Length: 207
Image (cartoon, rainbow, N blue to C red):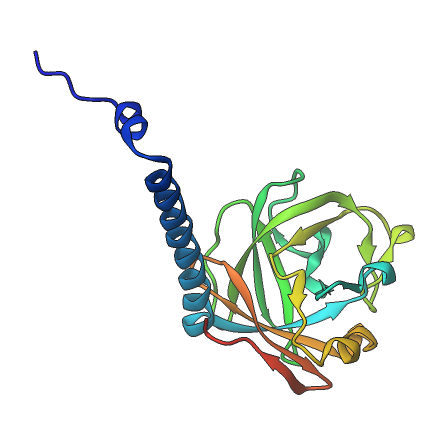
């Protein structure tokens, strides 16, 4: 009977140097896959304009990152199509469409990916909080109006600040900030451009 050496037998014979090199190559390969995946979203993803919403002032600026909230982050389930019961950390799909001002408005939230209608885009997110306070017209939480909302994160909540623009972004009212995100056909999103008062502040390079 022929015995096939186990993986442990091979790794045990490899020198620490070769094992270290193999680990480095594996890490580099995984990094390249992640970079290419994000670059593909930026190159070919559907552009969605997102209005930002107020966040805790203590969280506006953390080191080299701006912390962002969005109008579509707080979803009032009573006003949307789709499912009505959600739990924290559940993946969800949010169907959005441009409003009169061109900024994305949520139309429905679902546990399973829905079909997108004409002019609509579906963004994948994760439930950060169930039973959250609904948001008022300015985007601020209004618990007096009820706790029938969920909060959803999209992987767009932190943004690396380009050198020389950090102070301008930090001191800008969130109502003046706009994010243009690219959304892949599977629903994954990445920040593509950041604008203040409609003017380009930074555009992400393809890599």
